[in-house]
Length: 241
Image (cartoon, rainbow, N blue to C red):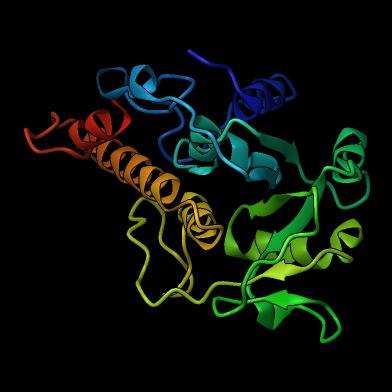
């Protein structure tokens, strides 16, 4: 089992808790890495894939502890994934140094309607042009919609980076938490669109399949059902073989 940045951040955040985490479903025994019930655990079938991209998950405080969080799926698949807890007044110094590393070209993923007029925006119809010898570092603001908007507004160290904005026509298949708006997607779904935008179609499909597997197993666990014969998990095993 590969331990990645999201797992380490989860352990750190849990160590800082002074009281039990009381989110819905938080008291049920789960695999601490995939957050699924033990009989539905998918840790043994996951593996990383080569990618030009890197991701940085900026997570709202308790988001990392929620069993339904899908940000960890990105780190399961893409090796170059970092994760940090967001702070309005004391941003993580390691994260700030990471953002300044010259190998990266940071891009914030967020709806362009919230960006200031002078801020560069990359939309669905704009080709993603990268500076020479730089890799894209996609920054995802991971939390509820209200929390993500707060992070976008109150993170001045991100203001100089361009915004990548998606307007997906399909509705989210994310059924574990209800979205405020119809076109809101889960964090892993946004990352899948990003990989597709970068031209990594196969990786995008794998992440979508990993997300579908997690969603299916999570919902089966809520009702204590077994995997069906034709499951997303079976498709994922075949795709990663």
